[in-house]
Image (cartoon, rainbow, N blue to C red; front, side, top):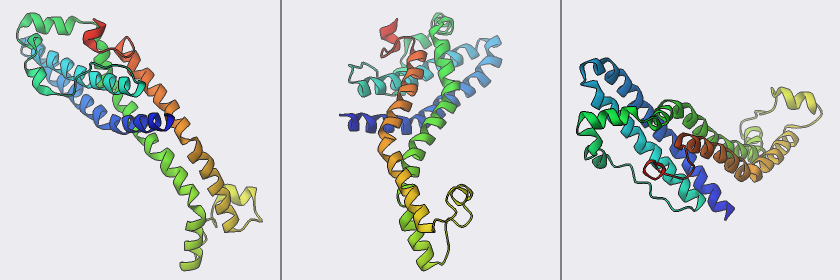
Amino acid sequence: MKKTETFVMWKIMLGSLPRGIGAFVIAVAGLSIGLPLAVFVVGLPLLAGMLLSIEKFLDLERSLLARYRGEPSQGKKLEWTDLRSDERLKGWRGWLGVLGDVRNLRGLVYGIGHFPVSILAFVLAIVIPAVSLAMLLSPLAELVSTRWFGFDLYANEVLLNWAFPEWTGLQRSLFNAGLGAILLASSPFLLRTLGGYYAAWIDWLSGKPGLTRSESA
């Protein structure tokens, strides 16, 4: 069961980057265009549309985390057709209602603040398994480099040269492989732990963990 949970969280962290980029672009574009035009009223629907668009991304995040936790989720998929038919965008009362809703400020924080969070989540989701596998294959890399190319991978490696000056390149590669095996074995725990922090970030933005905007109202 934990293996499945780890894989699901790994996919959520990988997919966080495109969601973060999309929400960030919408937030920056909406603020850049909507705020100057707000004095002419034209910017009000643009700002309201921006907030509702970001709400779609945040609802998707909540839905993905609900599936990861095995909770029932009523979060909708990211469908812009629903946004075009949203009654809140069809009159000035709806625009002001969206702009005056304090909960939408959390959505705006998501739109701007989630971008660096998504970069970090994506990088860690790639780096942790990639580094562990690379270290695990160190003996093979050392063997290929010395046998075929006459190149010592650890000739200029400062830390191992200082700690184990008498070791050969193969011994150092075996040491790295051991570290890689430990890192690979602990990768599921690390990914689940990092995923827990990611989920806590989304829960904080949501106001109430595991609930969509419509449910938390």
